[in-house]
Length: 398
Image 1 (cartoon, helix red, strand yellow):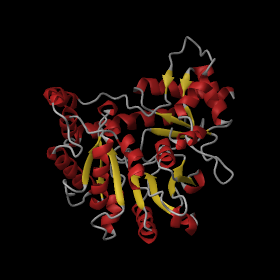
Image 2 (spheres, rainbow, N blue to C red; image 1 turned 30 degrees about the vertical axis):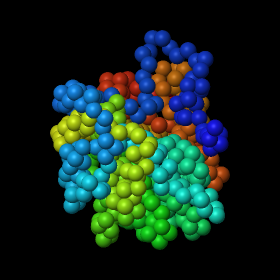
Image 3 (cartoon, helix red, strand yellow; image 1 turned 180 degrees about the vertical axis):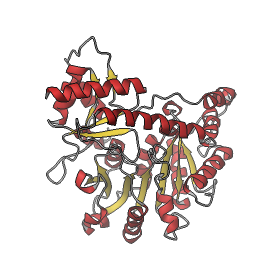
Image 4 (cartoon, rainbow, N blue to C red; image 1 turned 135 degrees about the vertical axis):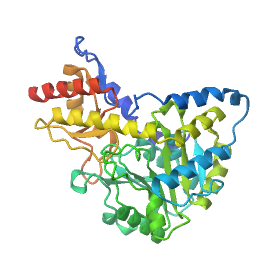
């Protein structure tokens, strides 16, 4: 067996199931699950139709690189969304079967563990647990950057010791952030690039929540924007990850892409020809339809906006919550321990939320997810409103 498997932590939802074990919530209250970030809005009809119309494609093996039409659609979308010149669809874009597997496999491809000291993979804390698992299974060591209210829930890159950057081979960034929804500015991304150039490491930018923003006048920027504005027009050391799961409410489609540094993607493509996970042809055609339409994405944002507005209005004066700049999460500070809060909220109100400590690690004497819970406003509006009323009742009982 791979000895690195022993270093993996239980997944957050395994811990949550154990936390809830033995509890019998009130049967007169229907369960409201806000723990998992699984979009519940309808997948667009035209995406489903495109998938069905291409089912004959199941009779052919897909290629790892995907069809040119899909890569062109992605290149056009990137250029329009981030106001950039179109990326080369042959060398700078690679479709992937969901960004989860890509965020994991990129570490297996790019990390060199044949070094005198174990390489470091730097990542925010709290974090998407795939980052940590990817580092550990590649034989590297995670280095955590605490993101707290004091840092605006963003990593403070300038506080990292130089010795860490000297060992760093890969930096994971997540903007908009999971779980806080905080967004890195162009200047902060450019500073990360300055460090990458100085110390020769790669930046993997998880931008999967980039299309779920609150203010239509302030869409989040991309690492690609930062690179291009700084004169790095070849996007050296940069790779960004995007997905249709949140943008187009299609998590089951397992469709996303990576884009950026052509040299890096050349090696990653070679890795993927062995790794597998080529996107089926019907999925590719459905993805083309999704990337070519913005109307459904705008409607999707409006649905989340309505839910945030309703929930935050009902909870005003009851607890300290602010509208996050992006994502569909609320990151709620709890008056008691996050695990006790989540357990009792389920026991008394039949509402499931995720303890923040399950998304983070003890680091520098603190656990930055402790005494927070992550709330995913993914159910329909009426369920989110019911949740807000139940949360008010629960907080009043504490």
